[in-house]
Image 1 (tube, helix red, strand yellow):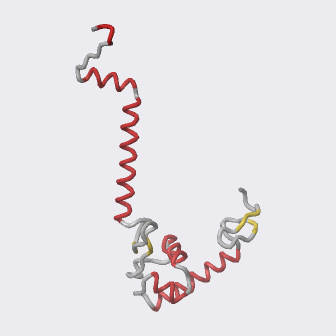
Image 2 (tube, helix red, strand yellow; image 1 turned 135 degrees about the vertical axis):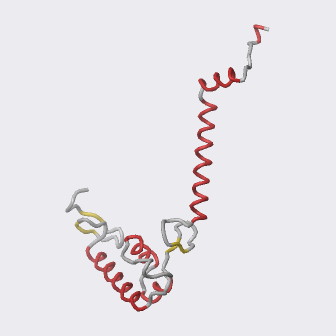
Image 3 (spheres, one colour; image 1 turned 90 degrees about the horizontal axis):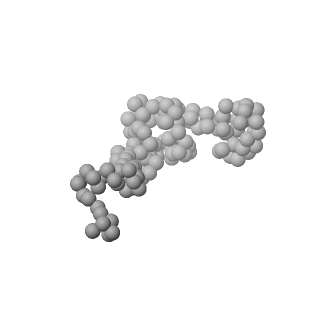
Length: 145
């Protein structure tokens, strides 16, 4: 899709002429206003967490999380600030998943890869022949007994 094409705003659904954003100019303005509200509140209240910030400002946890990921809100400057793990909701300060969910995902991926590798070994006839001869097993047909 080139610049100047019509698109639906991914935030509000309105039709707009697409520029560099996937959202309409009105939503861009609203998001900027939400950011400024959050930034002002954080200047005076550095020890709040994401839920307290959301409640005090009326800005959604999801939008505040986006500000953190974009680097607009700094976790370093606000020590109690974190955002929810995308899997379980535990508050984290980096990445998309907490350690527990990340480990579980990694373990699951390794298991799937190991199963695929085993399946390929079983279904690969060249490896089967090699395996039989590796162990010195000699198979004779029924007619050659």
